Length: 188
Image 1 (tube, one colour):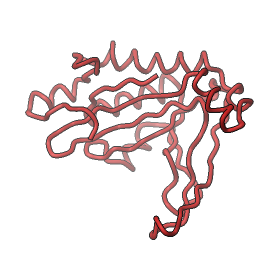
Image 2: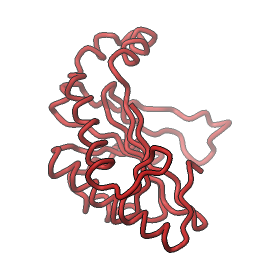
Image 3: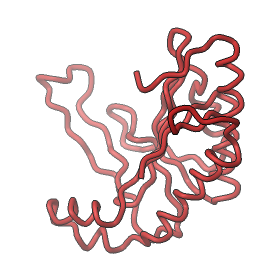
């Protein structure tokens, strides 16, 4: 499932409050900082707003709740020293049923769409067979992953968005910015 939407800083904070307070989720960074062994986790909106620029930045998070049953894992990625001169490794946040939340900020008076996405069970099983981790895929409660994802999408699209452009929900702060001349566009 993939769903795109336009969100201002204030809209993102409101969505994060729903994810943490009403859905009981934990957010993890997509990966650790370079040459750091710990991936940061967040349990409230203030944890994220104190670290990231939600107006102009484009942070990516992986969302998880114990209701998903599957495990969050952290895989060490060793960089090729011929390609990456400034660091030697990072840790990637992984898990078959994690929901990815990709916030996109303002760039030169344009706003790209933010995205929530995740595997469905069938796709995860296909990749799980390829990577010899079919049992890891089966640990996840896919009904719960899909239900949680649908509830987040419903909250954005049906409760928080004030209009829709080409299927993308436009949250109130993004609509205000558009009225002030910010162009709403796709990814950049």
